[in-house]
Amino acid sequence: NTGILLKNRIYAGKDSKSILSGTAIINQGCENCSSDMNFSAMREQGAKIEFMPAQKISAIPEQADHSAGIYTPTDAQILYLRQAGLGIIEIKDVTKEAFMNNY
Image (cartoon, rainbow, N blue to C red; front, side, top):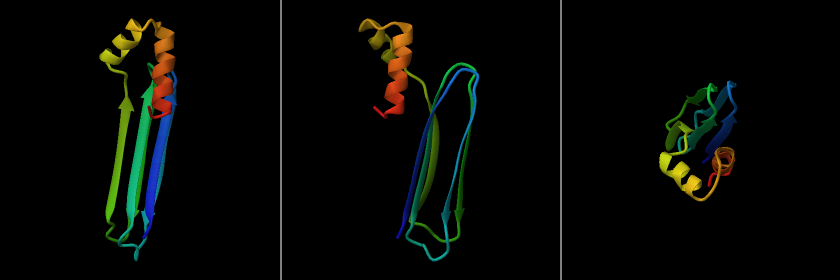
């Protein structure tokens, strides 16, 4: 019984191009295996991100999931940080650090 857990996280800078990819393979004879692939990104203006999760499944797994998402700070989060006295650059730095460290 094997589990595959893949969590990729990227911060894409301005006008950058990024690809997040990964392949989980569940071979025959591994019926109770599980696979969970998660791709997360935060991006600056003009950044392009391509998510490419793949699963090659030759048995009936216990589970085989995948997800992808792009994080954007909410207006409420930005307002809270502004009211705490942070400037635009500081807010960008704080939200990037929070995203990259999964806060």
